[in-house]
Length: 511
Ligand SMILES: Cc1cc2nc3c(=O)[nH]c(=O)nc-3n(C[C@H](O)[C@H](O)[C@H](O)COP(=O)(O)OP(=O)(O)OC[C@H]3O[C@@H](n4cnc5c(N)ncnc54)[C@H](O)[C@@H]3O)c2cc1C
Image (tube, rainbow, N blue to C red; front, side):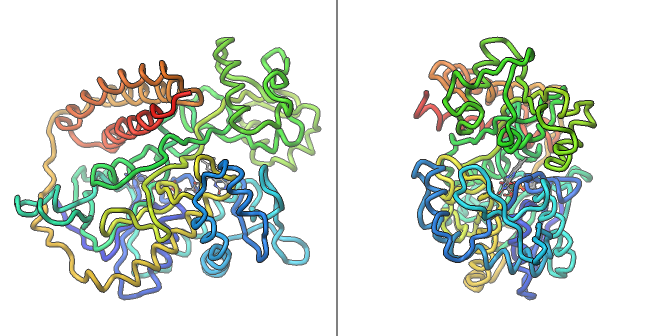
């Protein structure tokens, strides 16, 4: 077992973790570690973001209203205010000036701003339909220049280190609960190492991958949420999962590719396999009804008719127009032998965004001493019960930056590392790992979350899920204690724990 010492340990390399690292790196006295479980650091939800990131221009009188309207007035106003006051300066400093992220521009050289559903005005910076990729790659390129940042891949965080849980002496249990590092599983050596740190920042993203159909990276399995919960941090709003009505339905069980809402905006109709429309019977605005109405309607049709998916029909547009308007979607479908100018596109709703998370303040601080959470893993209150499109990249950027500022400003009050020898070494279990068991358990969680804790959550469905998860939880705990450690096993343990959290939160308000 090795021990690493960093002033700050950041877990996760999406927009939130990278922004924190870049801002912190300005203080050259700090030694910063940033890790990801991915083989490639870009493996994140950030990479897959399509639409864009809001640029709050001075005098935007509608943004606060739009955020509150999308969330049915459940957003936390101070979080909106922080976004309004600080975020454009941060976009300029981190994305434009430092990372040199490319966004669409007009002939005049000014940024071209686009508009999305539920936005009152055009205010979104974008780069084709691959904005997240442009942001992620440019931030990673910039990070390479930061000499005081150590980026490590294929490292899976297992647990946060808190002396009261992991101390070698009974006396340590009486200490104030605080985070002093993390146990990290090295996917290559199969060892669990101690990463001691004066501050730990969780930037591990959302939980979409707990669902059978989801648009997220497979890393979005709730590791950060579960670690924080076990350490004693508060999770909030966990029942509020945002579903996207249309993702591509293929035979693969991997993440589902988003078919942008703009396809419906351009006149695409939802139909069954014979071409019959069905949305008119659910809402007067038919395909343009709010997201949750469209998702629920599709699910009803699928369940009632025992269909695996429904279809989007945009064949009234010609090929050239579609190729120009939706270059990535067009190409993606063509590679799967679907010409969207002639063929129906099979689609299914999918879990898309986690509105709740680890509760933080305006600086990303959690209720646990020395622990910060930023990005989709956190709940700042900005999104309330439903997120306004294109606010999440901006939230990750803004809170990543604010957390870094806070850490730099407060570091002196805790100058020393906690003594690593006072922290227990990880003891590895020896039983041979059976990946088939893990895969089957994960499949059960995803199916159950989708069917019983998904878009429709009746009391009966939730109680059935509760019974299934209770049994599985016990089995997984035993399995986890006895089997050799593996990234997938870590994910399974966290998945069942967080599935339970979403379920319990949902039970408070069944439909
Ligand atoms: C298809 C799609 C389209 C989207 N489009 C938009 C959009 O247009 N505009 C917008 O604002 N938002 C959009 N979003 C949402 C937005 O992309 C995310 O909310 C945001 O990127 C989250 O950033 P993050 O840094 O918090 O997490 P992520 O980018 O998800 O990064 C999480 C990181 O944590 C790492 N990690 C997880 N667990 C562990 C562990 N145990 N140990 C080590 N590392 C770990 C992961 O490997 C990854 O590096 C979209 C999301 C998706 C999926």
